[in-house]
Amino acid sequence: MNTSPALSVKDVNFSYGAKKALDGVGFEINPGHCTMLLGPNGAGKSTLFSLITRLYDTPSGRIELGGHDIKQDTCKALATLGIVFQQTTLDLDLTVQQNLRYHAALHGLGRKVADARITEELERLGMVERRFEKVRQLNGGHRRRVEIARALLHKPSLLLLDEPTVGLDVPSRTSIVDYVHRLAKTGNIAVLWASHLIDEIYPDDRLIVLHKGRIRATGSVDQVLQTTGTSLIKDAFFKLTQGD
Ligand SMILES: Nc1ncnc2c1ncn2[C@@H]1O[C@H](COP(=O)(O)OP(=O)(O)OP(=O)(O)O)[C@@H](O)[C@H]1O
Image 1 (tube, rainbow, N blue to C red):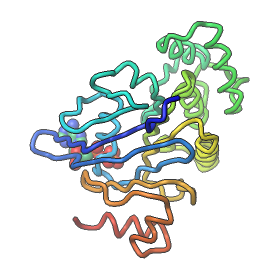
Image 2 (image 1 turned 90 degrees about the horizontal axis):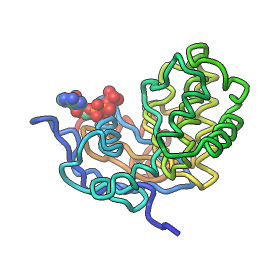
Image 3 (image 1 turned 180 degrees about the vertical axis):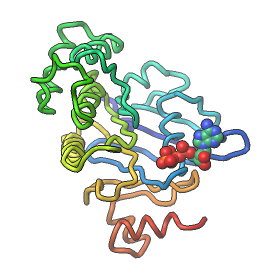
């Protein structure tokens, strides 16, 4: 049994030329709860996700997924990862099923296994009846659900979500926030969720507050409230992200 953290980030630094975007960032993510990555614009959230997904090389420090170093053991590491990007990456002219089958094939799943998993994930998300519709016909909330189903098809141990509710109406947002929190609770998957919407945080979430490339606080909601001497997350966030 693999007892390594789903994600381990150790002393990671990253710069765009002279501009330092991440400065000595380190944390671990484990299953059982959602970890919310909070930070104002420019905090470094997208940069961190680009390093974890290996879009960018990590020039210093170390990132491991399920104990696999993403530089030395890239395929094994990335196989443990499911991701929902900020911008939709579905093919609008393919059906829901075609999009999902394509992704399953990329992960090396045979057709039978793929179809069983597609049905399973779409059922959980209340989308199974929509499987033969073109993605173009779906509203924003339903497209997001398809993207979540797709991210889970290969049974990853870490789900990364980069502000997945941006642009959605309130009911769609609520249902996605609820769904992912329930998913995390099962304990089978770790969730790292970049957000700047305080109302997406549940009381038993873990928090990582990033500001100007540095981690300003980590821990449970209660711990972060305690260390900042506040009683509301929005006040804690404000305190942690004002000035340097
Ligand atoms: N391609 C780039 N070239 C130069 N600087 C960049 C580049 N991408 C990001 N930056 C800078 O790096 C810092 C971190 O940016 P990043 O996009 O990671 O933040 P973020 O927390 O994702 O912000 P947002 O919430 O606005 O998406 C910012 O100061 C940003 O201006």
